[in-house]
Length: 183
Ligand code: IMP
Image (cartoon, protein in one colour):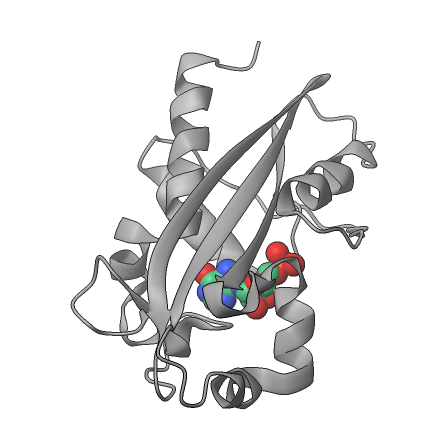
């Protein structure tokens, strides 16, 4: 997996182990373009890579999409978090009744000359205040609909992985790899 994000790697690895696959971290420069959709960014970072390895290579792009703001920060999630932090997001949401948001994950897979995409998402809402030390990024302010009212930040990695956008995308990938083993 081509990523600089250890949390993404850990979550992806855990999910792929359900299928009997191991995931390795690929070191190297990841060139990330700025684009309006995750699919384009994920595909681009793999298209540029030239590695002589027959094993499948993946890249994952993800983001938090807030309904009230037309999907902002979406593909700009890591930049936004760096610039305004969770406090900035909560400030934007002050007094807002509509707190709906979803996380989306897109995985690009390169296997030989073949490039394909897998995706997953999870709906929830933005909390009133940050809660929990777990997860990463926006997890302390994201309450998934399918949970029990806790934020992703208050869940263990296993709990988050039962419903997360990333786990869903990785399960699509795992199932596809099972039925299309590399030759
Ligand atoms: P990128 O895909 O490397 O551009 O980063 C996506 C950014 O979206 C991360 O740096 C986080 O800020 C946010 N993000 C994506 N997935 C998650 C998640 O599972 N939990 C918390 N934040 C996430």
